[in-house]
Length: 488
Image (cartoon, rainbow, N blue to C red; front, side):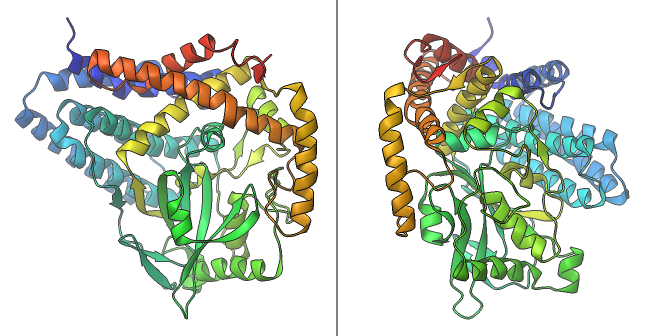
């Protein structure tokens, strides 16, 4: 009989296998999941059979091999695809060892982070606007993240919430925030706790873990920081650091323009000036939220556009790779919510931007578990979208929805925050309400119940591949209850 421990840690492949089955079905990036499944499965089963001492020795050999491959990658003036494939394999082997021998978990996490930092630095010399090279970055960074985070959940070990990456010098004004020296012009990627946040993160040709992007401005005289961001409800606003950090964020990643960037070399304060430009713009203009996602226009801004426009002003074109949404179901859902432009600058894509270096990340075990529920539900809902399902609302909601829209327009004219944001139609608002208040809560409650029963019966947390199966079951079981909000 296979032991519970064996079953519990086979996750490292199955998480990838299941995730990218969804991707393939939606005409997205294909991970070649069959090959990955067989390799990681074998690695884990082999790791279970060796002692902790032998595992440590193997870990060190893999660590040394990774360093040698990283040195080779750094030395080359162009991308070495074979080297990247070997690094990708090393990440999964390290995660498999750490899953079988939890004492190695923190070290494995450190090595994966080292690979992230070094590969991103090397990618400055690549043409990452090319889809194939963007895929190479995605495989390394998202793949390493997914493997380690799945191992973290299974180990149930609460590691440090704050991870600091390699120091990135900056001449911009700075302030210490939660143990990190944050500079003016720094970029904040985050994953909100709302269902719409999961939709933004997962509804991507390269499904990611971030749904929102903002930038920091630090006053050079008072040293007071603020966060500049675009919010659905109120457009572009200045948010206090306390309010920003006080939200329900499942993860936050701090990025910084590299010190060797040509623009910074010519002007060391360029990042600060980018933030200053947007900060001053808000002193004279009210910038509404742009639901159409027209990132080259200036009529309104969505969250990515705030950072994009600020840095473009300084001659720094971020988002070297712009995602093109091709999946018909996803395009239909986004179109029903007001999106009109499907070549996008998506928050999660900024994680693979060569001109930015990771500085720090905040992530807690409990929020990571919640992240997995939301991701599984949205992955299944996006499958449903490709099958022809639409988000709908009950017919009698149309009249009160129209009244609320009228009241919202009046509130906006009076400078008050509207219930339905400016630029969002009544239909779009009602569909979002269906997702956030009806469909997602019901499916999440069902999924958490199934996951709890799985944990009680098996003695370990359901791996992501199992969460996806449970989410599909929850969807099938609740079709009748959700027929007014989700049907084809």
